[in-house]
Length: 243
Length: 243
Image (cartoon, rainbow over all chains, first blue to last red):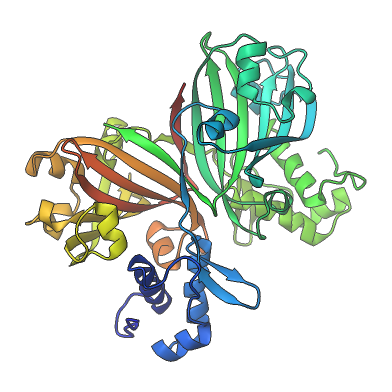
C-alpha cells in the first residue's frame, strides 16, 4: 500500500481514500475483500483514527465499500448500469432484460390539485387528481417507490386495484386509448427518508435519486407527473448522449 | 396550516413535511418566505422539537428550503432544469443559453493506467493516461469539478495550458481531428467531500451528483473517461425520454 504524504496539501483522509480506490482499481482489492481495519490504517500511515474513519465514510457514501456490523468494511460489488433513456415502463423494461418485477400499491387517494400540481398537470386548480404510491421490486428486491399523479378527468374510473401489480403504461395505452409520446425527467440526489428506507431495505440516511417525470401523449396532453425515489447502492442510472 | 394527525400511522415528521410542502405547492409559502420557527411548529402541532427539526432537515436535504445561521429557515428558489441529453461540451452548452463560463485547471498529471482505467479507456494496462481536474463556473458561480482521463497516445502533446479555460471537445475536434460520436453517462448521488465543497461553495455534507462519461469518436475509439461532481442545490438535470 502506497502511503499518505504529510507534506502534500491534499487532505490526508482524501489521500487515503484515493489510495484505497487505487487498490480497488488495480484489483489488489476485489468485491467482497475486507478493507484493512482502521487501527491498521492508522499505524501504516501514521494518521489519526478520525482521518482513517473519514476516508472509509466517504467510500461508504459513494457505495464503493460497505460496512458490516462488528465485522469491518468490505469492497462492494460494482454497481449495475441501468439505461434510462427510453420511455418504457418499469414492468416492460425489466421484462426485456429477463427480470421478474412486482409493483405493490401502497396507497391511493383522490384530491383537489394544488396550484403547483395544477401547473404540473396543466389542469385547473382544484380539479381532481388521483395520487397512487407504489413499491417496485425486481427479482424480489425493492428498487423504487413511485408517486403517480394523474388528472382524474383523463382516468375517471381508475381504481387502486387497476394499479396493483399492473403496468401503468399498458393501462394508459390499452384501456384508455392514449398513445405515449415522450417524457421529461429530472434527476436530483436525496437522502432517503426513514419511511421510504424501511420499504427499500436501506440503512438510515442512505443516498438515493429522485426522478420527476412528466409524460406527454400524442395529443399533447400530460397524463402523469410522477416522483420516484430510487435506491442507488445497486444501480447506476445510464443515459446515452448523442452528438 | 393543516395539523398533523396523531392517530395516523404515517410518522409525524413526515406528515409535517408534507404539510409544509403543500403550503409551498399552494404558494401560501413562496421563495424567500420564512418557515414558521421550530418552537411555533411544536406549539401548533403539539409535537416534540426533534420531530419539527426532522421535518425541516428533510426539506433542507431535498433543497426545498434552506437555513440561515441565526435567522431561521426559508423557502428556496425553485431549481433550474438543465437538459443533459445531448453530447455537448459545457462551454458550448452554456454559450447557447447566453451564459458566461470559465474552466479553471486545478491539476494535470500523466500516469500509467491502472487495470480499471485500462478497461475504461480500452488501452493496455500501464500505458500512459493524462488526468486533468478542472473547475467549471457559470456566470461566476462554481457548478462542477471534472476529472478528465484521456489516453496519452491519442493526445501525445496535450498540455495543461491547452485545457485551461478552453473547450475540451473543440480541442478534440479542431486540433486532433476526431469526430465525436456519442457518450454513455451514468448518474449517481454522492455527498460532496470537504475538498470539493470548498471549491463548489457548498456547505459540509451537501448532496451532489456524480456523472461518469465515456465518450466515443466515429472510429469507435474511446477518447475520454470523465468523472464530474455537480452541485445539486441550484439545478435539476433533465433528460428527455422518447418512446
